[in-house]
Every structure is written in structure tokens, then in C-alpha cells.
Length: 85
Image (cartoon, rainbow, N blue to C red; front, side, top):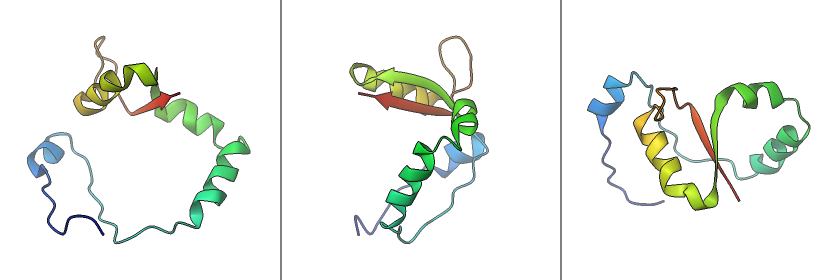
């Protein structure tokens, strides 16, 4: 499952005060249920609060830059960036 040796910038994570949780594997069967739940609209309010930036596919580089910096050009915190096609 991927590269057996992973490099993790622990110092950067500590500075941003994020929690890092390791996962051995995922349950591929959960995707249809998760998609159905999101389509139901039950998480619309949560998504509205968590997704702070929506960018088009052409702005992919900017999306990754924002996610990496944690704040946008105006100083607004970047929580979740969604790239839309």
C-alpha cells in the first residue's frame, strides 16, 4: 500500500497545532453511503461552515497554495478548499 517510508513535517504540524491521526486502511464500501448522505442535504450547514474557499479547476495551483498556507490573501483562514470542475 504505497511507499513504506513516509516523511512527515512534524514541526509544521506542531506550529499549526493540528492533530495527525494515522489510518491503516479505508473501507471502500463507505463511499456510496457517504455520497448518499451528502446528497441528502443533511450536511449542507456543516459544509457551508467548513468549506471556506471554492475554486475552479483552472485555479488548482492557487487552491493547493491556499490549503498549504492556511490563510488567503485577505487574511481569512483557510479551512477547506474545494476544487470544482
